Image 1 (cartoon, rainbow, N blue to C red):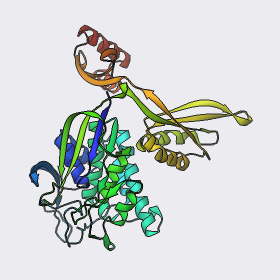
Image 2: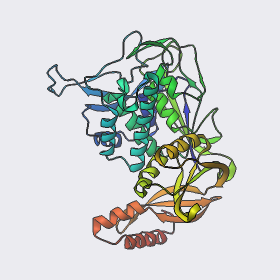
Image 3: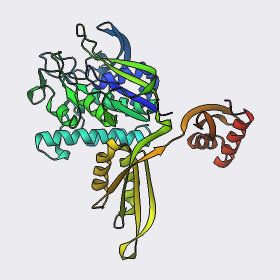
Image 4: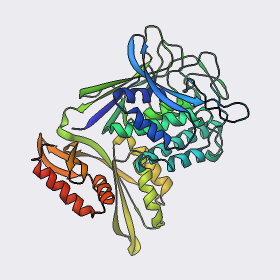
Length: 422
């Protein structure tokens, strides 16, 4: 069955709240630290603690940054601070950092990290989207954008960490509630603005929002970026068999109103594995073939479920490439934008359709070449396929100097010998 994730944003959302909720769901903090450490930027350390928000127990994610003296020489001392500038403010201005990282620098950190190719593409796409939003607000080119608070180390940690955590969770379908943005005024880098702040409002375009009784900024730019970057639709809680719930705490503790983001995870119920998707296509006969690789990465980062290319013969008897993208209906506009921006096509077509998927599950099995994960597929509870994960087989083959096909054969034999009950 498809895994569904619901962002319950009754008290808004911020980057640290998203990460806190993912940690509350079971994201291993050591794995998170390893992923963040691979960015090779100096940020001190991160940790998480249990806190109460209006009587609700939640996980608070914190960044403890290096405190450097005026000379710039590091002393090794770290201090915590509230890192998503909203959720912790009253009248105080946002925290400022000695160095604001540019979009180019951030992209470099991500490219050199140990994140998966899909996660790298997703994180880069999120920062590019944020830069475009700020460029539009200030009326300047994207390459001239100064990212202010979100270019600071703590917000880089929030966004990249959330991308890593969402990949760990591996939800098939992400839905979000209408977002409570709060009310009142907020101090930003360019002055005092009404809630939601300009960058947040731009990122929430097309999303259902509302203002509750709490006078504070509840949705930060980072929170808006992450929720809208992953949710394919917004509305009430979808039908599902609830399995786990994670609570991520904001900085402030409002009286009588839990300042938490709730993530609800479960198996989608009903429909027997049938879901509505959109197919987006175009043919291309005049593009450098080297661009098709990066194009696929960008399409997956924008939310594509499947991307494939097929050789076709086009008008004037020219050889070309048919680009087909399968996506959720809510991601169609983002996919189309990538196709127009990254290819030479001048038109795309799309049509909605239904697809039926087998129930999927990952299990790990001890084999003569180590532990190998198997992808299991079932229909109506009956196992119809079990295949070893290629990446695990390739890794085991490289470690032992064996052919990948031989490792695959040994893994399949181990599965059969286990009786398919591992």
